[in-house]
Image 1 (spheres, rainbow, N blue to C red):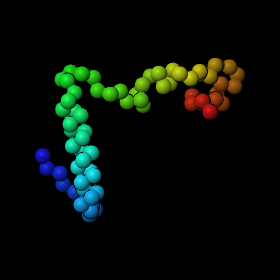
Image 2 (cartoon, one colour):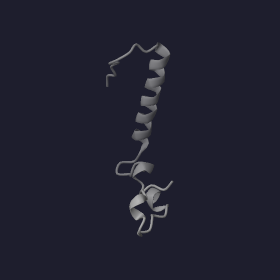
Image 3 (cartoon, rainbow, N blue to C red):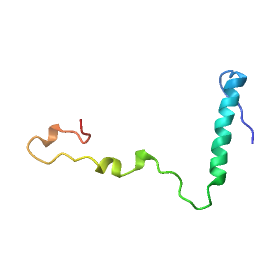
Image 4 (tube, one colour):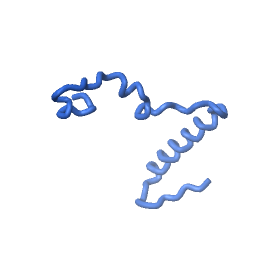
Amino acid sequence: MTIKVVRGNPTPEELAAALAVVRARAAAVATTPPGAPGPRDSWSDPSRIAAHRLPQPGPTAWSRTFWPG
């Protein structure tokens, strides 16, 4: 595997930090059993939306948005 710096001029410390993150991520993926589901992203979690009450329809419903607050 080859890593190439496309932009910028990282210091040796910055490059070492970036490589440490890549190696840690690769080690975490390597220890995951095949076929196991990955971690669930909270953005795609349906309970994030269902946890809040939705606006009720009515005469002023057009002025309310889907997102509370």
